[in-house]
Image (cartoon, rainbow, N blue to C red; front, side, top):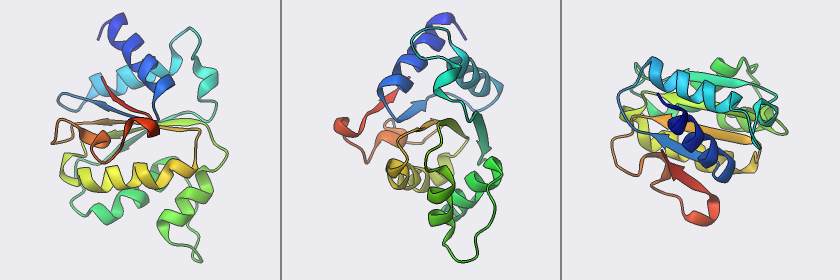
Length: 150
């Protein structure tokens, strides 16, 4: 990881709500996302006052559980009156945080769906590692929604 990698990810996170980080999953992705969240400059840690969160998806095979995994990683409570996705949206409204979806290639479509569903939460930034298509999380999105890839 170089200062250029960090600056590139920081630039993309400032410009886009969803960013794909290519390469094998692991500590490099976590370190890069954390460093980008703390990167000094116009976009600093103040951009993510609610934190940077890692969601490990490597063992997940059922894409319908992606919202559940994100909610658990963020420590959001279960709301029996809402679907998991609605509870996640409710819990994230008004928050400003970075979520790193790690090793989600096997549930890439569900990750992309989640990213689209969270557009009602403008303070949420998603960085995803290891998506099977070159477009990754950005596949179903267009440029007006603000997407990018490192």
